[in-house]
Amino acid sequence: MIVVADSGASKTTWFLYDKSMQEPVILQSNGLNPYFITAQKIAEAVQQTMKSNSVDTSLVNELFFYGAGLGSSKNRQIIQDAVHSVFSYARIEIFSDLCGSARALFGNSMGLAAILGTGANAGLYDGKKIIQTSVSIGFILGDEGSGAYTGKTFLQAYFKQQLPLELTLGFQEYSKLELSEILDKVYCQPSPSRFLGSICYFLYENKTHPWVQNHITQSFRAFFTEIILPLNLAKQLPIGFTGSFAAGFPNELKKVVLEYEFVDCKIIADPALKLFEYHSGQEI
Image (cartoon, rainbow, N blue to C red; front, side, top):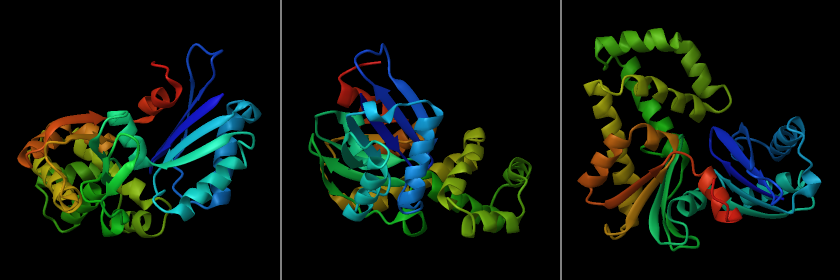
């Protein structure tokens, strides 16, 4: 049996498949970013996911894990050790989420792969691996254009009374959160980036509002200015995006892609299925 896992900031999608199956088993668990979760907690979360779905982990002989926060060898080893404790008979390969996005978008062809989900990143893919990438410094110091960044800048405008009145009232009704509660979620509770990214559900519900459209467009422009352009790549390269935030606002994103004179834009909400097909050779 092979397992292909794709782990973002918010969730992990697991595909389990062997040739005796007509279609893969698909499971979901929380995101498993080693910057925010200990190795022990990661191992426990994976074990619980498999146990609760009656998966015999001893039958797994290959596992391909793609995840956020895996740019460093230290973090890749954390995931390697945690996953190996559950799938002890499997050959395990660990890759960054950016490599996963690139393979989902381009397969074995070259392209500029970008992530716009809760977090953000981009890099040049040569058809096998990422050979150049932007600096990834997380949602506090960077991640311009991401869901967390866009939620954060929305909250800044909200609390500084820079929103149109109807959006202020709408968000009050939507969130039902006081300032103290929001600050607690951002500064004291686990997964603050996930909370900030969740603000984008409100923006999506109001995506036709001119202020929201401008806010989203400015966020995508920040992504290009701070993450894409420093790569200094040829604009003739095909460019592709994965992530729920990119998929939620495709028109605004395509508008900005054209503004920066890139061509052949491709958007995939969730790379997990394409990664399964990439490793299994099975199309579903």
